Length: 325
Image (tube, rainbow, N blue to C red):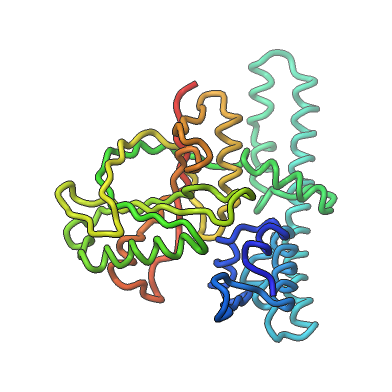
């Protein structure tokens, strides 16, 4: 049996993603009576290796769930064949893009002056060619091999649709825990606070933020997580919560589906490479994610209603503090 921390380090996957895969029913862990940590047996470690490989190949989780179920070989092949067809469509789109770009180059090279070049690129023949591309997902190169997939992964930050959000100052109820599964612990504390205080009824615009505190590190056995729930200024916060004031600030925002926390790296790369914006992290540095926040959208509403199974899908805004260069 292998602990969740050992699996996380060996396979380079966050403990949060491991918990998410468990919630989706893809893997299972156990808690031994004499042991405080979650542990995985060889069968589930093997399943996790398969999941990680298929995710790198852009196979969606619903398809992975089918492959890992009791489906026969023909069904598994059908699932993977569907992904092959998607890749082939992407390659056709990339080939079409290459052909249009080549046409641009040929037309510009024979044009005289800026006005003529602009006119050539905007004529109806070119517009028809562009409309016919039908591009769905331009992330793969023409040679689909692992090294090129890795390169595409490194370039994902260039494709982000980053928004800018000015968070106002607010009073928050803060919950903090250091130890195994810290997100679960603070989530339970914050959820209980929302339900017992009936916060949503008095402040329906309440928001929930979270961040690592401290960050995971090979030098310590555990990391921590802190959650903030915005509250009316005059509301009392019972223990284990603490009442705090958040000064607000300007943030670069990128929305993700729950579980895609690897996209934090993409957002940080986007900020690092921006000609106009720079990080504006807190003095604590990596101990609190450089001031970055994860806003769990609609969290207070869902907590108030007891997390119904047919609730809103999990969406999270990744928020990176920024300033003008």
